[in-house]
Length: 451
Image 1 (cartoon, rainbow, N blue to C red):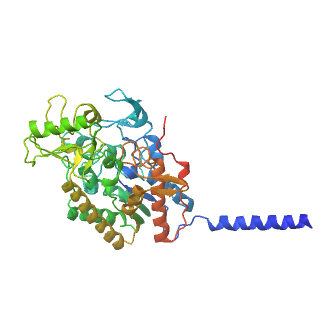
Image 2: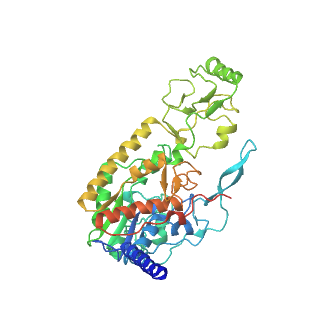
Image 3: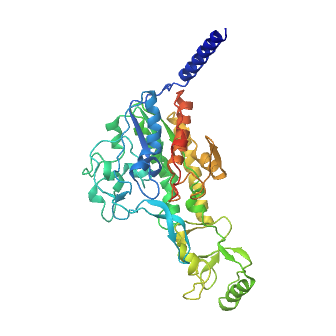
């Protein structure tokens, strides 16, 4: 009797498991994943750790999503693969960063991002048609720029993009545009995360090396991209723009990084500021705001103290802050030394960024409704990440290095962060088209690798 009962229970368990597996079968719903195209910039291309390299591309958001769509009869997804783990070599490019040991100006040895030295791929065409059209550095309007992949335009004044040159299907055609790739690929489905660089390029230079795209032009360009993507009946999903000022590149260095630990030092600094420099800044024990360069300052040295909420960029020279007096008094000239404006985002600049982001996201929402696309609310998701999330038992936040989501450049996601973002796209696809695409298991993808 016990043996019969065991057999019955075993059959019941097997049947229950079999039914569960059938329920989880990937289906496409009303979407057609036969020919998948991805459009975007560095996030979708797989750029990470300041470079585009082989394993970063394998873990790109675009590739991870396409891999899951293949479970529901999705087509082949080809990327313009870099063969090197060190990046691509061209004028202005940086080597990949890894976490290693570095010695600062004070002789302190600590873990920090260091260059990963090795042979990088030369800049050359890959020689095949690709499905991942994401281009690091591209703004939305660049997809309509003639010759954006033409090598003749890679010399000053530069009008082309070296990353697009690698896979442009007509690189010597001076009139060929990124959007002209769409007709060749004839997509049935697409993923798009485009527009970050329309505001990020401005932010990365402290508001002095680039401009924010006018929302009117942004709407024209984004609308044009979606019109051409959907011209053959393709369906898709589009992500909006996160608050880029909340990523580690802008939040790691505090505005009040002048830490005075002795009252005698406080008295000395206050004496210099008042008696020698005629500056009305008062310093206290503990944390004090950095001085920043400000041409509009009414004071002799054209500096002011940073305000709460203003941001110091990760690109600020750390040794200058630690050892040479940047942000307070230069140890060389013995005069006030404000952090140069390219390393700071002021409140006015932050308002410009956030107002543009809000306008862009309204435009994206309207276009998504017009073209009946699924939407990924990356703005909300990145806000949640800043506060901290738990996914598959893994805790993550947006802190530099230790947060588990961002790569070592402080801007782009690491493989685990890309896996989470891919799941946001998959959720949007399932919601919009009634598909049942399984999520990526984020525990299969690493965060920052420690030595």
